[in-house]
Length: 330
Image 1 (cartoon, rainbow, N blue to C red):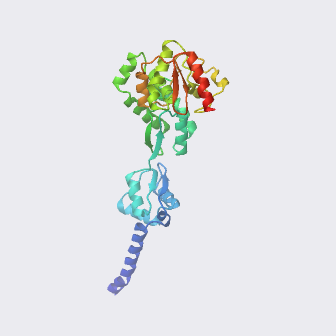
Image 2: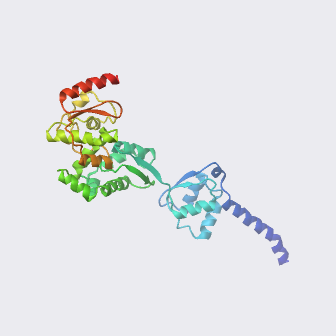
Image 3: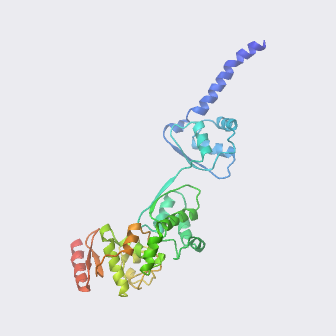
């Protein structure tokens, strides 16, 4: 009798096992159309994790996931974070992913000449932080002191590069990583060369940032550097438009006469010498150009087109070039 009962129950057990295996190994319907993103909050319990996975459509069965997690002893090994679950992933694959902690990486490009404001918008677009949070953190005195930043902001101390950040990182952590990368690029040899020219690291980054924003053609970096060095030696104002754009928050936009006359410490038409700090993130080439200006006596330059400039030694030659090239551009 018992044998008969066992034989009758065997197909049911096999069917149940097969059904459970199907729930664990077959991708959820939503996973067949492409990868899905699921965010597991920190300190979330197992039931909360299962709810998140189910609502995201990455598992077929809550019960199957719970049973599999219990069977593998991974209940306490599941890690919080933002995960990108690949297409056709099964429940087993999802469990492996949460055990591994391989969270989604957000690629952030911070190019040469970019500002903190532009970085803030990029981080906000990736939903890593709000733009306001980034702006506040960039000027936070505690963070600046911890990172050894002399200026009023980490502006110019963020090395232009491609970064990978994960959701959950604090703004301080992201900015610190970018500052540390700049510190790593400023070798003792570069710092020694700056000191030989009478520049602190802060002044070097400030000058390099202006060169970075002025030079479109890489071949002109050393020429533009020479113009600024010559002006500094003669105590002439730098008259660099990008510093005014920074002062009046007109990034890469045309300036008015009122902008050029604005009484802002970053306005190098009004104030002589270097501004209080960098206006953007300089790359290594701009830093090198700041330390190695071309051996020329140019004091002026005006845009010939969207990439190149005309350089002059005298104001008369410069004024003539301004008229000539502005008329040709019109």
